[in-house]
Image (cartoon, rainbow, N blue to C red):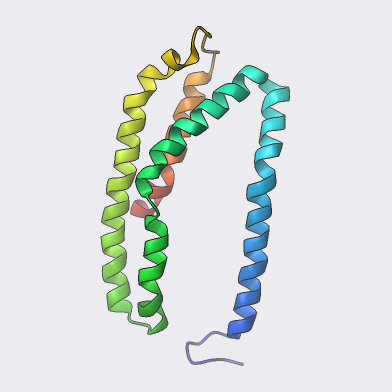
Length: 152
């Protein structure tokens, strides 16, 4: 049965699907880090796991630049989407694209500024081979969420 907006699913059906996919997403986000840690320990050793934790902490701090902006985006878009006001939605999305561009560039710039000091954070440990690629992937992964909004 088709409703006013042209969807073939009822609101309760959409809520149910959203709950299922949210549950699946939550399971992945809970269990995937354990699997990754196990693979890193067996494949590369405990030193890489320590580096992984250090890089995660550094780039999580850099991602604080987002400051919950994503939740504000969802909240502000609720009414225009519900009322099918495409002009307002497009105006909001254009503004959000500019803001996310700035946030992504701030994270990228701060990450590039921190990268030269990374070996100093290890206190006497030698940086293992391939750690540069590892740290660059963390940096681009950290700012990738914000910058992907700009180019999509």
